[in-house]
Amino acid sequence: MFVLVLNNAAENLGFTSYPPPYLSKNAPGKNLMIGANFASGSSGYFDSTATLYDAIPLSKQLEYYKEYHKKLVVIAGKINSTSIINGSIHLISAGSSDFVQNYYINPLIYKVYTPNQFSDILIKSYTKFILELYGLGARKIGVSTVPPIGCLPASITIFGKDNNNCVKKMNNVAMSFNKKLNDIILDIYQPLLDLVTHPADNGFFESRKACCGTGLLETSILCNAKSPGTCANASEYVFWDGFHPTEAANKVLSDDLLASGISLIS
Image (cartoon, rainbow, N blue to C red):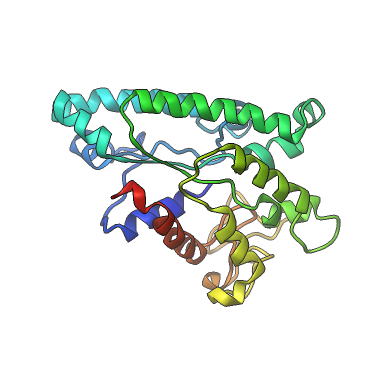
């Protein structure tokens, strides 16, 4: 969900270019030496979440990562590729879509599992993924917490019961899930909650309504600067659409991520 936050964090570290999407035309060849982005929007720890939105599931992302390893060996040699992987920063951000875009709207799940039981399912998938990643040589792994999902404009619109406040029960689920992640390096929950509850302290004007989108969820598949109803001052908004922070908000969040994840680069 927060790919831009991670990109901004890379910018803060001094990178002049971002690791290209692994499946893009810019990824092959020596470009793989600067890393690759395996993320897929609306994916999550639960593979069925990705299936709902035609995204790339985590299991498939891991397959692409293994494929990347083989290509890196060809380009850099086995010894160098092992050193590159061991020293690389691996950033994982998932979970929000599993709850907001799957669990809470999918009766086939929420009628079968309690939020706590569903969290355990996600943790099982997360644990398996991290162990496999470690087995492939990853050593510097940063995992972000799930943000305050009850404060997303889409969540407030759907589950807010006609008020403009964060949905407390959803935030409680997010906090409970984050505790299960154990040793968290990158906390996104509190920094975003601070932006939502005290926007003016960080130079923002609007933290409830999204900048882009005119529909029920304040979002759109064509959400861009030219979309009808898009605000003219996105830098004053915390949220770009119903689910994602603006670039300005991401910059604030990336600064917090850099501070909390300094151990990854030391």
